[in-house]
Amino acid sequence: MTNSLYPHGSHRSPLPAASVTSPRDTTAPSPAAAPPTSAPAPAPPAGAKPKQRDAFFDNAKYLAIVFVAMGHCWEPLTDGSRTAEALYMIVYTFHMPAFIIISGYFSRSFDMRPDRLRRLITGVAVPYVLFEVAYTIFKRTAGDDPDYPFSLLDPWFLTWFLVALFIWRLTTPLWKVIRWPVPVALGIAVLASVSPDIGDDLDLQRVLQFLPFFVLGLFMKPEHFQLVRRREVRILSVPIAACALVLAYWAAPRMTSAWFYHRDSAQELGAPWWAGVVMTLALLGCSLVLTACFFAWVPGRKMWFTVLGAGTLYGYLLHGFLAKGSRFWGWFDADWVHKPYGEIAVTLAAAVIVTVLCTPPVQRIFRFAMEPKMEWAFKKDAADLARQRQKA
Image 1 (spheres, one colour):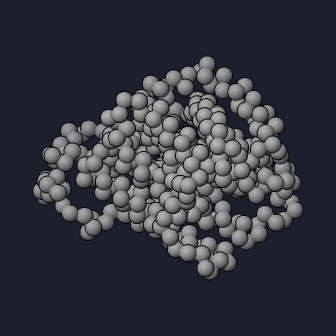
Image 2: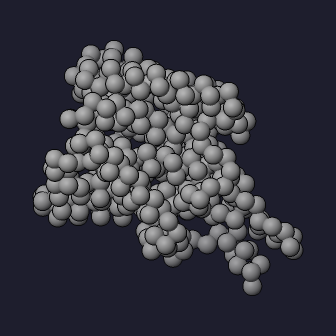
Image 3: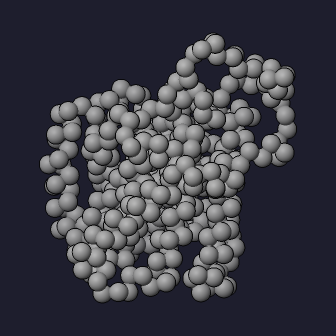
């Protein structure tokens, strides 16, 4: 999901990746790279080269958003294909946790400083409002549901991630001061999984059940990512992934994939309350293992798709119209789509479409909605005035 699903063009979070910002990218308008409000940012030395973005994280965000799109195209195929259901479960085990961990990692420097709060509003809250309205209009028209209500309290389809990222970022200072942040976040997730009264407002079940991944990302360091990218981990990830696929193939007809959405309590899924505790802990472990396997195979060098990692929030939110439209318009009703060659074709089509939606031309077209400046909406603080005087 931020753009990182989360995923903003300046490495601000999304996400399928929030959006996230590389700490080495001082040119990006992200919370991690913003100058302090107490003094204007010093001018870089003459002739100094700007620091480069970290290709690993751009690559990870792009590859994760491709898996998000492929997962959405597999969903209509799962009823008639056990293989599609198994692949669907595997992808849903790690793609959002990977995005959320990266989002947490690049939220480490977030505080309540005015400039960072402004970016949180313009980079997360405003896109949420605009796309929630746009999705509602789309469902009313293309989905032939003219009475579907407008509501900013009930995120539809993909917009839940923006709500979650907004809440997670705001709570970042809290996680920095408590003694055992990850166990506390895990406890909250477990309690949420057995609390059917939480309801659907702001998709709080997902916010709380995915919370441990964000908090874990907050406390990760560069050496942790280096650890999972070692050659021995990469080799070990192959049999682990193979075993996971076999397990998913076995489990496909025996359990519902709704567990992987983390949007319902155990009772709402027709299971006893204690199943929520077991499944939350089990899925957390599986997600961390498969996410580590995913990171192990993400290239660390610049690739042809590295530049697309800056546009993953664009791909995430825009591909939702086609993902839902394909159901509204009956694209999956054709028999050939449910044949092996048809399943491969729609998988490749999903990867190509989301790739196009992450490209710089698409980012330029939709930047007004994803990264609006909105200078008119905010007060000018002392740092803003100092920067303006320095430029003058």
